[in-house]
Image: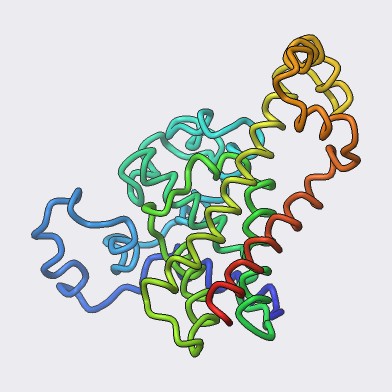
Amino acid sequence: MSGTVEITSRKELALMPAQQGPAGDARAGADDRDRSQVSLWERLDRPSPAPRTTLTPHRIAEAAVAIADTEGLDAVTMRRLATALGVAPMAAYRYVSGKDELIELMVDFVYGGLPLDTPADGWRETMHALAVHLRAMSLAHPWITRAATPFSLSPNQLAVPERAFAALAGHGLDPDTTMAIFRTVAIYVHGSSATEVALQDLRRARGWSDGDETRAALAPRMSYLMGTGRYPAYLQYLQQATRKDDPDWHFATGLDCVLDGIATHFGI
């Protein structure tokens, strides 16, 4: 695994505006297009149109992520952000056009913390590490299961499939198959993480502290359903399962099944 300095540098590089160029070159050509036609990342890669201030994309993203982590994604507004940063309500609009782009910035910031430079021995080890890190990211920032989609492209998000594709290269896979393998693993991680987050949200909302309290609260409904006799296999699970409250084991076992299937199907 490479040092934290390298990871931070990559993240900050994606978030910081480019250095000021010669006068007249700063926004040549691109300003002829409407702002809505230019992506956030293209704008941030351009030279700053004004002298740099203490407010930066990095600070904006960091503050917004802190709000979302503690209060939820719906609590993130441009006004709430301005208050957290101690700046004028319109200050952040120098970098983002509104909440949609702010969320893009937040997602990229969080993805920038993934240790993608960790060395691995092969494609399976790489995909396993990516899956574990993506799950940890989702559990640390539960709102990201809502905010990040395969279509919310950003520099640090694209670094994930880039790492996966590089690991899968050299195994005789065509590009479509390579993408299918990556998406299979990514979708497994997303589905598993989203389920964990949903359960955490439910427990928080209902005041249930653990699995025992959750099952006790759901017992009347479950007892009725099991009493119908229509679900004997599920009843056997309820009576015999010993890892109901072990999400780490469930995730790791499911991930092994996915990776075993890929290895067997493609002979890699």
